[in-house]
Structures are given as C-alpha cells and as structure tokens.
Length: 427
Image 1 (tube, one colour):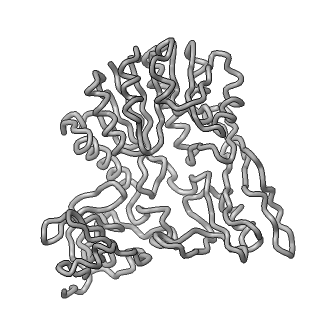
Image 2 (spheres, one colour):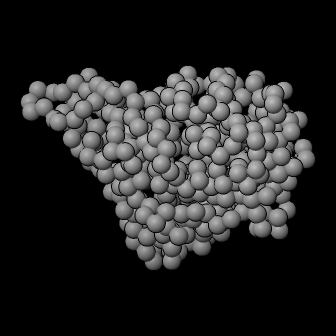
Image 3 (spheres, rainbow, N blue to C red):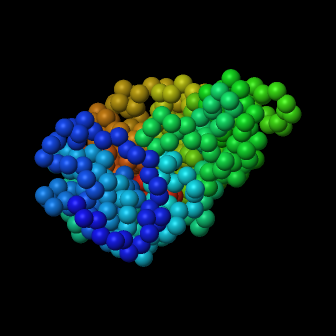
C-alpha cells in the first residue's frame, strides 16, 4: 500500500505501545494487517473515532478525531469490525491539540488528551445520545430534547484524588504500559491532584517490600491515606506518613470517612456538583421515604437525611458499610440494610417515594428494575458510569411504565473515555 506524504508530522499522534493483534487477525490470510488510510466520520464509546474500511466494515481508531484523515495500524481484525490506532495524521481536526502529558499513548489512563477540552465534552455528550438511540431504542427527537450538554470543569487538570501505582523491587514507582505487563516509571501525572504527585515524588526510589502504592487525598480536608505502610530503603528517611486505614473528605459541607477498600468518587470538585444535582432532583418530588440503593459510604444518604422524613440505604460491601455506619450515625432517620439490592428491595415496607440508584458499571439486575417498577416509587434518580448499560436499563424502566425526564452527563473524568450521567425517570 502506498502511504502518501503526510501533511502533518507523525509527532502529533502519541507514540503508541505496539498493541497485541488478535490470533484471528494473524491467521486471516485474505486480510493482511497493513496500515490503512481512513477518513473518520464519527466518535464512539471507548474514546475512539469511527471510520469505514474499503470493504465497508466499521473501524474504531484510537488517538483520532472525527473529520480527520489518518493512517492507522490495525490492532484487531474481526469479521464485523476493525480496531486500529492512528499512527500518522494526514489532515488534522482543528480540535486536535498537543497532549499535556509526556506519557500519553504509553499510559492507558487517558484516551483524549489530544482533543481540546470543550470538544471532549461535545463528543462525550454525543456518545450518550448515540447509546440511547442504538441500545435504548429511543427516538432521535426525544434524545436530543432530554440529553443535556455535559457539565465540564473550569480546570480539568489535577483533579484526581486517588491514584494506584505499581512499585518495583528497586523502589521505582509508576504504571504498567498500556496493554502490556511492562513497567513505566512515572514522575508526575497531570490529572492527579498535586498532593498525590507530591506523595509519588517523595516515595519515588525510597520504598521497599511493596508491590503497589495507593494514594488518596481529601481535597477539602487536607487529610490523606497512603497504603500500605511503607518500608524505606537505607538512607535518609522520607517524611511521609503511611499505613492509614481511612481518610476523611468533605462534600458540600458533609464529612465522609472512607476506608481503603471502599469506593469514593475520585474527582472531588465534580462529585460535589453531582451530589448536589442528585439531591435537587430527589427533593423536586417532595418524597417522604427515599431508598439509596448501592449506597456505598452513604454519600447521597447523608446529604438527603436532613431534608426527608426517612432514608433507607442498601449496600452489600462490608468496607463501605463500616464507613456508612460512621457517616450516617448523626441521622436517626436513616435505616441501613446490608445486602444485595436485588434481594432486599423487592417488597420493601414502607415502599419508597423516590429511589436513588448508583450501580457498578454493569448496571442493574433485571430483578432490581422489576422491584422498582412494582414499588410505589414515583421517581427514580439513576447515577450511571456507563452509557451503554444505562441505555439498556432505561428502556426497561420506560417499558415498565416510567417516563424519561432528563439525562445530565457530568464530566467526572476529563481527558478519559469515561462518562457519568444523572438520569431522572417519573411515573
């Protein structure tokens, strides 16, 4: 294949780590894995631009943008689609920028640093709309009316309050390179909070007998948790406390204890916006009884307890439950249930007026949807970190008698493919 002289140097595309090609791709003798030239016309979940191969198959291309013409290396060749990585840009989008991070393309943490931030927000909002149309089978006009523009950040760098690093036996700290088991030393991560980077730089080259380093900081409290308890190599001892079992973060004036194994939002600034949005949408329905399902450490329940008669939380994680016991202790009108949502929500008495659901990426078990449909709940506020499973579940709710009122994307993870949504459904 003749590759034309590029109009833009290859340096505008991050140098990718060679991706492993699928075994099927290797044995397809009629589909040689030579680079292909593509004009990209769309954007899909996973942070990939979309084009079409000469044979008509869809091609998902990393590190590219809609409107660009690129040379792409095929990394996976399937009968119905192709995965590829842009290695040369022939015609660049006006939204392409120079990545801020020297590790971009080798580290797998970010997928969109080559895209101007405002364009990232537009593309991610488009993914939400596309998933609602394709997976949820909602009409175009309905999707356009209900999906709001994504709520972005004023400063989309230095936001991540939790990072987990790999530690080598010689004390070097870093990440594993994207798609490999190769170690990559990291001096600083531009999306990590400055205090996370300060811990990284203090511990770099000084640790021993640790395989991982987890750093979590309370942005609003100045508290921090560094795990595990670090052993130091011979020499000057760094001034860094470690081995804490928990730390405290504050959202909208409410303090939360968070222990090591428990989940907590990694973006404190956007978490405050998301929590305030959820509380507002719950209180709009003037409920007396609210169920906070998948309640975690009690993030939503603690904010709602002062405004409604009764809150019931459901959470199966023992670690999160221990934190929730502390965080919700001041509120006598909160009842905690330890168990699976699908086992405890059906038949609950009294039946909730509003249900808040914040499930894992896999979304809801059908039994959970059925239990909510069969309850007296007049509103559901669904917090989702996966537009695909959200679209699937929203179709079940609508088919069961609910009406979709609003979908509000929130950019919890700038420069990455990840998308958070707050969705409201009413009877």
